Length: 230
Ligand code: CDP
Image (cartoon, rainbow, N blue to C red):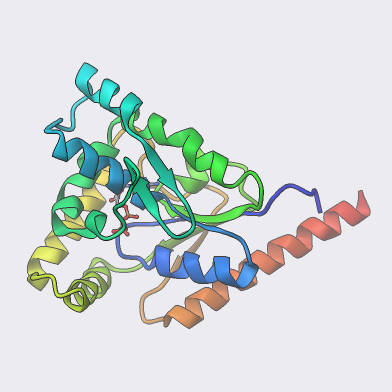
């Protein structure tokens, strides 16, 4: 082993199952899980509440300098308050990608994300984990699923939380977020060349988790082997 903390980077479009899988994989490996989407959501919540629109300007820059944002394994603290539930509201679903497309917003979160993995390693999920934030991650996974399957999962999740939603709207929003996340010029959603692509259509959470863990073990075995022969 090279001794550096294990980083597992999981990227993919909205609703591909990244956070559920990443949490389970982190649990099995005994390392922290980092939900980077939560950070973008918290900033969107903060900026929206302050009436700052998603365009790069001085007001946005100042707000990003001032905002206090912390993430622990259990909580996301915005100005000292846990906003874990608020950031999942449909309003945030609708606005987050516009803020996430701005380099100012992305830069604000870069060091914060990298800091989290320094001590114990981590499993992180998002859109640019393998391409931008952790380009040296030992394990890179790109999770996909059809838009319909992803909308179905998101719809059930909203229903469970008693949020009112129509399936057609959820599907349209998923497609819109895919478009926005893939076409932006700053850190667009794309598979890293050295990432393993996994389609989760028709697979259970347990099956996908098992596949990801198998990939992690295979890569770690190879690293150990290479270290041993060097
Ligand atoms: O869970 P879901 O896929 O719905 O979204 P999320 O991971 O909570 O991320 C919400 C939004 O934040 C995404 O649609 C992206 O616009 C943005 N995001 C990003 O740009 N980069 C990341 N690393 C994570 C999220």
